[in-house]
Amino acid sequence: MPPGGTYYNSYDPQEREEVDPVAYDLRDDADNEVPIYDEDGFRVPRLRPIHTSAESWGVLADLTMIRSLFNDEFIVVQNEDSEDDDMEGIDEDAPSIRVDVYPQAGLRTLGHFKASNVPNGFQPILKQLDRQWAARRDRRTPIVRGVSCQGYNHAQHCLSARAGGIEVLHGQLTAAMAGMEGDARCRRIKANLKGDMNINLPFERVTHKLDKKHISRALRVEPCFTLNVQGLRRRDQDGG
Image (cartoon, rainbow, N blue to C red; front, side, top):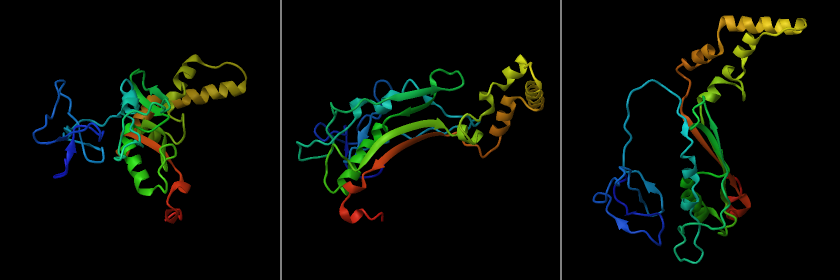
């Protein structure tokens, strides 16, 4: 936590109260971190992560918790009726956010996701950008707008040069065991398939790739934004 500064118990300037981060409770009854916020409404981390040594493994998202990233309860909007134009609360006209999930390896609740908006944590940042760069501030047409977001394990991209290119997704082992009868072309395909399986099974080839030290196993979250250049101040529309 940065030294100095003023901290609050809420991001909402109409409801928040100033707190002393030293005397303020660090955890609640459920042993979760009690959040505090700076003057711009950004959450200030109070706990440090615990680092332990372990084998490298692919990080996946907990799909049962994904909706909390986009929960409308935490969407913040400009309050046009207040002299303090920081944050208001809930925009009743805010569009619903679609979240699609993709469980991996039969785990059902762990995997990848994509959404039709960016996580709520970006809302104070977008608001700050709008305040600094917009020629005419309008809640309905902000200069920077979040349009989508996806989260996936980077190993997926390291293992394949194209979508669907990972060996274990092709059903080669099933096809080799099922066999193929027919004309010369079918018999040739069968022979090539069995030859590939004799050299290395699909999961063995993937394991060999994962053994390489440069393979990233990080969970990547990629938000996408649009910039309304015409909404910028005229002197800032030159691309500089």
